Image (cartoon, rainbow, N blue to C red; front, side, top):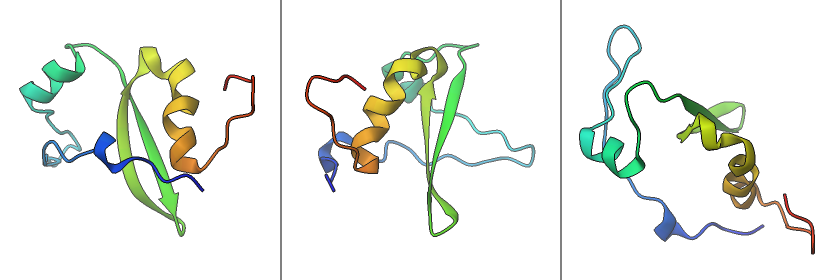
Length: 85
C-alpha cells in the first residue's frame, strides 16, 4: 500500500457546526481554494471499521476526473502502465 505524502495535507482551520447543520469556511480558505458564493462542493467520506473517519470537500465541477486521481493513492490503488484512471 502506498502511503500519501503527509506534506500534502494539513489542518487549516477548525470550524463549528451549528444547530441547523451549517458551518462557515473561513474567508482565507475560501480565497485560497477559489471557492465563491454559489459554488457546489462535494463531500467525500472515508470509512474505517464501519464508521466515517474522514471528510473532505472538493469543488463539484472538478470532481469528475479528479476523484480517482485524488483518492487513488489514499485507497492504495496502483496505476496500470499506460492506462490513465
